Amino acid sequence: MEIKRDRYLQQLIESRQNGFIKVVTGIRRCGKSYLLNVLFYHYLLNNGVADDHIIRVDLEDRMNKELRNPDAILHYVHDRIKDNELYYIIIDEVQLMDEFVDVLNSFRHIENADTYVTGSNSHFLSTDISTEFRGRGETIHINPLSFSEFYSAKGGDKQDAWREYYTYGGLPLIQSFETEQKKINYLKNLFETVYLADIIERHKIRNDKELRELVLIMASSIGAPCNPTKLSNTFKSLKNVSIGSKTISKYLTYLLESFLINKAIRYDIKGKKYINTLSKFYFSDIGLRNAILDMRQQEETHIMENIIYNELIIRGYNVDVGMVEIRKPDKNGKWIRSQHEVDFIANLGSKKYYVQSALSIPNREKEIQESRSLTNINDSFKKIIVVKDQIMPRRNEEGILTIGLFDFLLKEDCLDM
Image 1 (cartoon, helix red, strand yellow):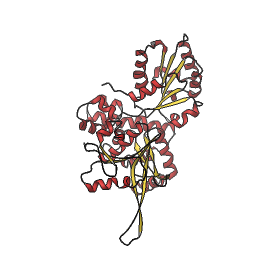
Image 2 (tube, rainbow, N blue to C red):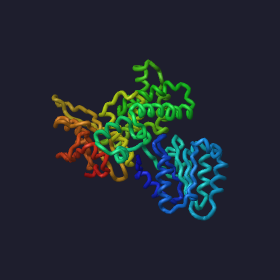
Image 3 (cartoon, one colour):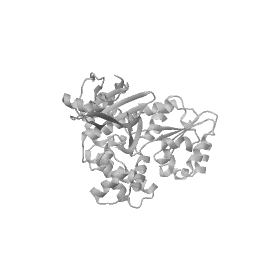
Image 4 (tube, rainbow, N blue to C red):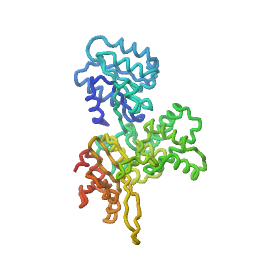
């Protein structure tokens, strides 16, 4: 089954010969190597680049262990550059190389070379790229398959595809397994032997039981407002275990740096300021989240919210959680305040959207409930409710657009309807 990653391939194409080191980042097994070594490689061949002018090295391959030595790989690359034509250097899992930053900066001094690398850990957070590569590094962050990418490869009935997607997620290799048990085993094994093991080894964690319990709590409460103090209290009440908020904060950082989870900060829409007391966390792949919980807690409401968040991130938006304070008099005339949440505030340049996730809106009462926070936002940016039901897009008298989930996931221009 061929899976297209056109969004990321186009980013690579547009970045050719721009003088920057192109760093493809993302969670392990999300398709970084496939993007560079299959899709981009064949694009170069189909556009006239000779095969001997594409230098590819997979540092995760035991056969290339000696090339993890910085001097060895420098000589290896230089020995293969035979003329003044442009060469493409493609290196997988470059963090396995000692002193890789110095090596890549050395590649920048080769006038007829264009360098592309993949990396899967905290060395490749987008905020660090420009610093580590002296302002000449460009990040291309790749995510697990979006529903659109998944469905374009799978086809068939959308509802069936949706059920499979929200159960097993979007890691590309999951599609190679024929049975449900094999898919579940793959995800559980991947979490234990790749993601968790990588964090434990890299950060030399001695009590990995605490980390495992934290991941379980995070997985069982996706989309729930929390912070290290609240999570510490949860450990005490549910697990009868005492873990300090500083330790939990450190573990959360490790999970974020591994790209296993993402964080959405709360934002006071009327006050125009961030509220750092509580945040929401979402899993970058919902299949991994489900496997961590042994495929229990399949609440479609929360899973749909997580997938909508991921979709907005994939499209390049910065995503926050909105808070709106509403003041109204009670029956005695006393003014009372209440806070209402906007699931997501999606920002991209001059564009801003307020997005609510709702599994269904069966009646007017439910519509009023889902719209309450949106109707109390006094600006002109678009306000959208995404519902699981297949409906025709409609706009109510307050200007709020309601669209179906498949329209949202499969049509990128749907927010501008």
